[in-house]
Image (cartoon, rainbow, N blue to C red; front, side):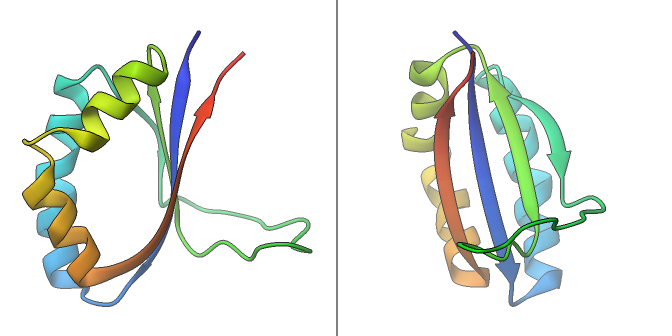
Length: 96
């Protein structure tokens, strides 16, 4: 069953964040991830619980593959770059 990593990101340092994006995408792909959206146009229709800022959605084969990417030693320094230059909410969702 597929799984998705959903990230809402409020970028504080756009210049460094561009470097993060350049490093993160090929690594996610190495772990089988496919970007479905990456900060594109968005229309918030309802926001009773949450007002998203910039959404990224990455599809993986399953929850295990998504977790392997997020928890990988390869991603750790890149994740630190994201944390230093943006505020994020990240969830891993099981697909149908």
